[in-house]
Length: 153
Image (cartoon, rainbow, N blue to C red; front, side, top):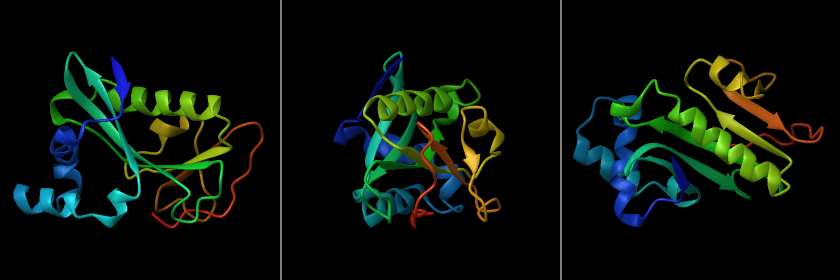
């Protein structure tokens, strides 16, 4: 298992991990084009989890954008390649990010979940008050409290 930033040539693979969830039934080519032209995606940094030379899971990290205060991180677009689902790889990727951010002095992490929140609650995330229905979650370090909530959700 290897946690890393993807190469530019791997971005199509990363984008296609979310085709069935976020492609809205559209064509693969138009979905890829919308991902490549996404202003939202340009503002973040992608990370991936590689298993035996294959990209298994990915997510995007936001810092200093979308209303995030310094020291706070936003995680979005967590997904797993269809052939690697239900093996815990996306969870492993989120855990690696949590370790890195905590070690670097981050105050907290916001995460958007459009799947059952219990998966992230097991990692310490809590649903943000007033955002239970839209899946916004928060994990604070060292007693950090939720601050201004990010607007990328």
